[in-house]
Image (cartoon, rainbow, N blue to C red; front, side, top):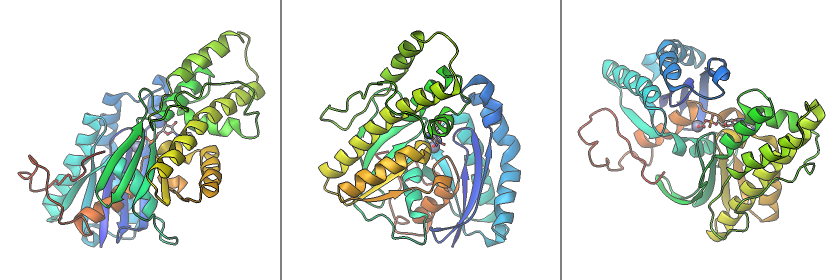
Length: 343
Ligand code: KG4
Ligand code: ZN
């Protein structure tokens, strides 16, 4: 079964073809990052208008790269939320129209659930075993979940203010690094001194699994006020590495605590920030020390993409979730089924 996935929740227009829910046949991401960079953040109106321009060529390219056309597609999955409403509408209406025109089933899926379930898109290794704990860490979210079985999720803890990616993006802006900041911090931190600046690890001693990252930008501002002269590249690297270490310390500590508290064996890390090399390395050694099996989402599938949408969509269209009941209010819509409570 081939599922065409469509993702347009933020500033990436993406389409992908995934076979049998696990094998990625194509994954095309058209990033608008250059259009939003001058504003140092995503401008919703610019995002929606550019999704409109790019959705048809992106879907065409995903089909071509998979070596197929619409006749080789068995179903369509589209991100239905959370996200920017104008951006989401472009993908959802496109998917509905395509499904109606071709007589195909279509399912609307949750973006966060898709980020986490991208850990299953690695055909050559054993998939995560339920129940597992997942850290979903991106520009908009930083949350820990317990997935007890497919489609069943409980929120264990989350950031009470900024998301970790948002904190990275803001810190990078303060340091004069390019947008998106998490990517820049990852790059300039390589080989630099992670203990150069003492940044706070907020809530690390708090017994809950909640987190807080907003104090970091104040700490960064205070540090930079003490250094009013222009910073050299090495110093920017040291400050970035120290900042990154503070974020990583909290994420690793809370994730391992969540796994222990829920007595699971498997742990997934997902979302844009899960592409961070230091987070991946630290999480791998902490998981090994704790006897846990870590499933990091492949780097190419951490930031927004449509393969994760198609992979999850397969479960709802043809897999173990295909008979899940429709939530109230959506039974009337013959096209879009949205089955994702708890995220
Ligand atoms: O998942 P994503 O593409 O979009 C959201 O759903 O938010 O995540 C984007 C976030 C941005 O904050 C970006 O700076 C961060 O992920 N990010 C990274 C890295 N790559 C992307 N943060 C740290 N290290 C990276 N390598
Ligand atoms: Zn995302």
